[in-house]
Amino acid sequence: MAQLDLFMTQELLSQEEKQFREKVRSFVENECMGAVADHFDKGTFPPDLMTKMAKEGLLGFHIDGYGCRRRSFVEYAIACEELGRCDAGLRAMFSVQNSLVMDTIYTLGSPAQKEKWLPKLARGEVIGCFCLSEPEAGSNPAAMTTRADPREKGFVLNGTKMWITNGTIAHLAIVWAKMAGEITGFLVETWTPGFTATPIRRKFSYRTSPTALINLDDCLVPEENLLPHARGLRAALQCLNTARFGVACGALGAAMACYDSALSFATRRHVFDKPIASYQLVQQKLVNMALEITKAQLLTLRLGRLMDQGKADHSHISLLKLNNVRMAMDVARAARDILGARGILADNHVIRHLCDLEAISALEGTDSVHTLIVGKKLTGIDAFK
Figure 1 (cartoon, rainbow, N blue to C red):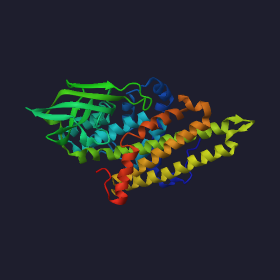
Figure 2: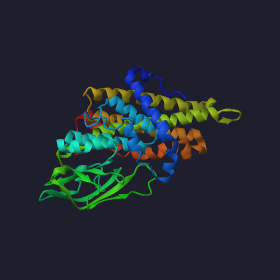
Figure 3: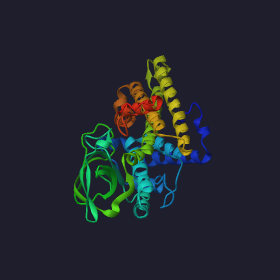
């Protein structure tokens, strides 16, 4: 079935961007889509997909050198859309490795840290995680209680991090902690004594994502593992911008998958001797879904171009996340309704996306947080204070 593109956004892509979309789409169809429903059911996901993504050139998006080829933000959006069409956990694994781990080391790390870790991360030999959120400090990371205390030739970390994507399979963690009252970033090998990753169980959303609770108990890291440019809350939040953009793009991909499933089912399913797609209420649902997806496609492409031109700021990303996640949740619910009872089967994919979107609405900033970010942009008044 042809992909929904009512306003011919594909014509706005370069030939290289079109070829890249086909490459990622082929990877998703051949390597990921067939097994994802089973993994969702079991709450697992194969970590070897990271090395497969590396072979496809999908790691190191934002980096020049170190075995990486920098790609545009539009191409990053394309990758997140296509991975998001398959599964939110897959898209999250990709985004964390690229945007929260590799890009953080590239922009905030020392030359030695870059040389040591970036080539291994680019080959998928090392999996990374980003440890910022805490049980009592999610939307307000400034309230973190994790501490770093200087010791001879190193630092001792104590604290707890929560909702850490890739946490149970990671080899390297970027940990944010307060040292002398200032938020500071550290590289922590996950085999370091005192570092413990516990799987978060009984999740009904993001089931394929290996999400962890991280405990740091007198975890000693050497001096050379301090990220030299990772100082202050601004540094930590800057790392989230591209990841948030990826979340918004992945939500668009999920919506497109739900629409495809609903349209395919509506044209095949017969009730009273004719396909349900022939009924007015079903057509209304499909039109509304297509309308909202089309608007999101245009917004997403436009923001990708602005980011490539260096003209975007964090409020643009907040606006896109608000729009795309709200839209995707509405589309997924409408698709579930069109599929009827079949809409709750994992093999039809819609229920997976619907459950995952409940998590996506909260991660990388809740709907309320992004609303207030955009509100400040419009009014000039900071409602957080």
